[in-house]
Length: 388
Ligand SMILES: *Cc1c(COP(=O)(O)O)cnc(C)c1O
Image 1 (cartoon, rainbow, N blue to C red):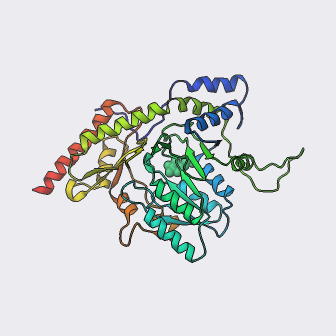
Image 2 (cartoon, protein in one colour):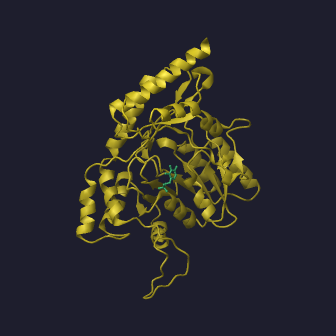
Image 3 (cartoon, rainbow, N blue to C red):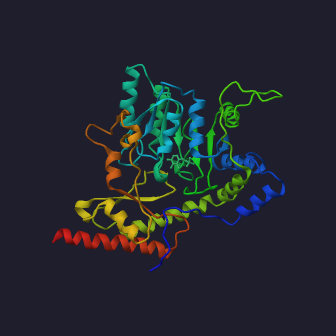
């Protein structure tokens, strides 16, 4: 048995990163701006077929900038997917605004259009529409964009697409991240491509991205001295890290292919086990399958998600729970939340039963075999016990 730990989604370098880092050193562009940053932004725009992009220090920073650009401030409401990483909603709090959480639906695990519709209608009747809706694409799966975009348009509320996990995914042929007023990406160490830490904000609105550049560099007024009329941030991406991003972006398609292949392998090997259901892929979409995720029905498999994760851990395999819904988080205890339907809480169900399997694009075949045999072995022995 191998002693080295199998990780969920470790970084996967292409080998070209050092060249761009060396360029930065050779030209002494060791700063939060420079040629790698400019080129990285152009390359992101090119890849997405988008108009404007600003590279920033994290995905969280990109969400914060988007909210700031939309004028979200104290007392405002912002709707946000509940089943997500806390980073999706923290910037709402930074702005002094109030989050309202929207449940998932079972087909994509993402924001439920029918819950969103209820929430928007109620807010409209209360004459208190949200300033923005943050829609998350979980684990690479794009949300039901046609329905969500049409609802946001109907109520005149701008949408921010949190595509931190879905770079390289498409919905009806269109790249994830390009559906909202703003799209955001993350290049954190665990994402499909990484700069070690970093992010990007995308928009069709050139004025807004110009303003984002201003806000992201401490909002310095045009004057000879240092002068500031509004509060800005220090959110630009380093020229060294942007160099890593340039080399990573070149292999993005390969990374998507590799993750999809790993998903397919898990699927073929495990789909027939009792109580195992994989996250579906919506018709006419391509998920980057950032993480392979599945739910486990203890009644059928004899084992819970929690027990499976413990079993993996004992075998030196990193598997994780699906995100704990934000409306259940201690920091958001008294926050408003709209369920998928009356009595149907999809995100809570997914949290209870979901697990994420090791899915890195550099996951070796032997390592995949180990994950597969661990899961098979556990369920086969536990489900038999249940039958006896
Ligand atoms: C990773 C992630 C973020 C935050 O990105 P950082 O670059 O880590 O700040 C935001 N939303 C989701 C859904 C994420 O997975």
